[in-house]
Length: 158
Image (cartoon, helix red, strand yellow):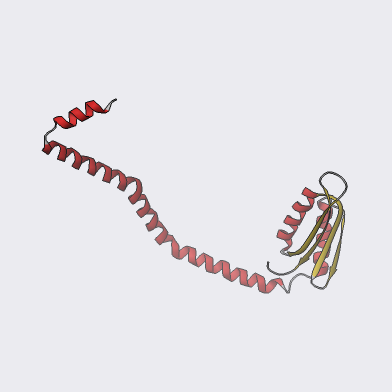
């Protein structure tokens, strides 16, 4: 469709008709804007206002549980129990390594391990045990994707 027929149609309208068409187009654009943008945002704002107190209460409960867990974290497990758990976890993951415990820290060492298996084990063990990684040293070993790794794990939050 070319513009010239529209221009001639528009030019053929009386001034009053043009004003009416522009007013109708303005109403249609305003209605579309309201239905497409304003009304959904207003509805979402109302929903958020209704849900905010419940979400704040849940956040306070989470903070309370976190503080309780931190308070209990130092008294529950011993390094000896963590050491045994780490040795069992290494064995389940198929990694041959050694675990030494001293003070408040576990030292885990593996030699000639698959890098992917080591990193997967370290990630899952830290999540399960709630220990944090203090230090990690990784060196390439003989073979593709093989590494020698040492990690120091300690109790406490990260």
